[in-house]
Length: 431
Image (cartoon, rainbow, N blue to C red):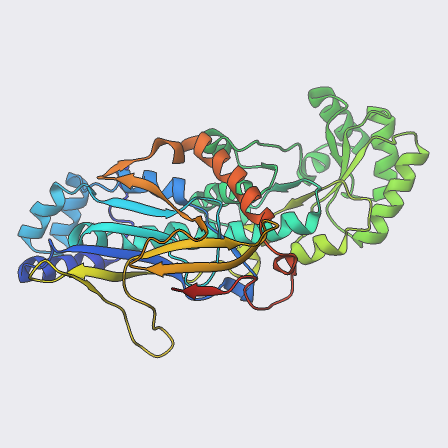
């Protein structure tokens, strides 16, 4: 039976680096690692940090039990001395980073991990696995929320991604402003509101569409949402109002030429006296189709494949790099790659968001080895001496991240909300 440890959610080279560093006697050197993105996915104008609260719990569960140690031993991954070190592994360092829900740009030091090389390096894959996926989903979802222009969206893509990713995606979309998810585990684990009624199979189960509608209304009440595109949409709309009455909650359309069809259904509902009945659409939507429906009387959207796959950018391109370490004499040394196309500044970073007099963000300013305060400080303490800040965890932490995203996005200039490919909405300046 598998343990609940996350310790093997990693790549082999993390442990072989540890093994070699232990043999060289450099594994205990104090180090600073940073997670950041060199560019925004899909040439988007901004990104949204998501996954932090989930990651902190995963780090707390990063333990090598007998099951993990036994497998590593059987596979000869590391030496016996390293296995003994791993048996007592607990991350005892500190982590600072952008608040979950924060806006980020290329070069933003999203997560700063301070600890010994050994403790920090083996977290690389786990950190990037969580932040790369969750932030990609949240970034795409935030664009959809803006395109919806105040109309609610529901995440319903669980069947289009792996089961664990489905829960993570539902959480990330909620942080980005989606109103609900179809995924029940996301509701249980993270407090995300859940929704859902019936699929086409429920209609096909019954001898007639009317029988299916009556069964659903009997079970869920007239405020339910009836799916009206199994057969003929206009016939189904008439049946839906006949069965549920003019107080029918909503009808859902999952196919067809949406602009024309939605307008026709709205007229039909009004003519039938169901003027308060809502229309929700769920037909392979993304931010572009949502934006195209702004002038159409849609009341809400359900988004599946596009949101859980980052709308074409399923990973955020984040990396995890050593930026500072102590040398043999205990002196701090800034370090960085100089590879062509992959160069980045070394040294511990302190990021600020610079706002103009109206409160609009104008610059991402990142101080290197300096804590000058000339803007809104972006780093907060996430974990101190191995102890996680409780405010970032669970349903409460998820709700706080959702609230922060709304406030952070409100600071952005208008050009940030363009859906076309382009430059980041704010320049990143290293000071």
